[in-house]
Image (cartoon, rainbow, N blue to C red; front, side, top):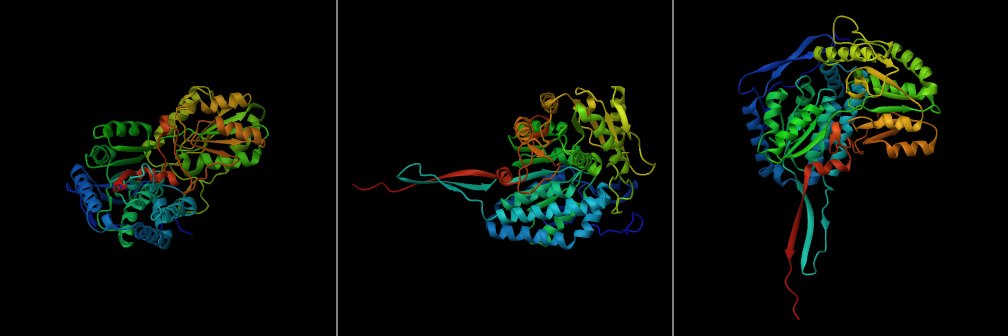
Length: 493
């Protein structure tokens, strides 16, 4: 069995990838990436700044309008995506290990979910690359009029630290399928898998400059990227506060923007539910990756008559979770990503207790090395409490009582977020009523958390953002519609 003490994963080149070449930043700056389970430095990587962003955007623009990529057909773009998926599959174990070390996610999760989901997404959009059909529109008898899809242009893709590889592929795969070029900025806390992705793309035959990877900080490299006048599309996944700042920056040049932001997803459990299934799936939805998931089931609304039983069962399950070595396949709860994040989460626990919540379990740091937090359940929480209304992004569940279906719906929709929700009931009529009425982009019924590359993912506005990743809908993110009007010779009498 692998442990944190004996693994030495293969690292990608740690410079900036610009125009097909790996090199140091203009300023020569580098920063460390930390293993959150041990607080040890994994390696250091080049730190991009404004000057590096300028060169990367220029390289992406050049690849867009000249060279092989500019004239490559969809079938050939698809073959490159298929090869990227194949190379990722060949290096599956090394990249899964590196993702666990860099993000703190238990290896069981990166093996079962993160890397397979990235491979599947690449293959899904590889299949779309030669199927971006236009439309013939017979507007006039004396003209040939049609609409075609064209690439939106240079894409700034900015991804978060909780699913570094998967979220990068969610943006890179459809953008490449549509013929765009990309400047990818991974989160500064988890840059390594994005650097590997850039290398695999080159190995797969992607022309230089089509995919550029710039590790760096949001306040410098990220800010320079989203305000760049030669970027055509910004695709961002992250916090609502940063999303708002991106919208303001994009307004200067009227840049296209897609934002997948926060969540405070409700898991609504009715008295007629299969309680064991609801407990098991809600626990997984709440504590997977230590609750650092935008759709985490950290707002649980339970019908009053089963509230106490549900809390007792959920508590028992939480207390059975194995905390520890992220490279032990038996570990189910790893650390949160940083000391700053750990302190923020523990502050929220204190806020919840001060607001009158009943502590059922957890609420403390686990151990004194690594950023581990006990799985935490706070019961009898009021619907207006901060721990119910604000995204904590940690292993903290707030359980709220609901008197009946109407009350449960009011509680579930009483939020600024609109990303996802779940319903637990054996009443089919209720399931359909609730799924129609819940203000959420995804609604799960008697399950929690699955996603698929074939299904669109995103919120319905508010703090959860605008636009969709995944599915056919993502193709609209990276294409424009161009109308072509060909005037035909007039008919002779």
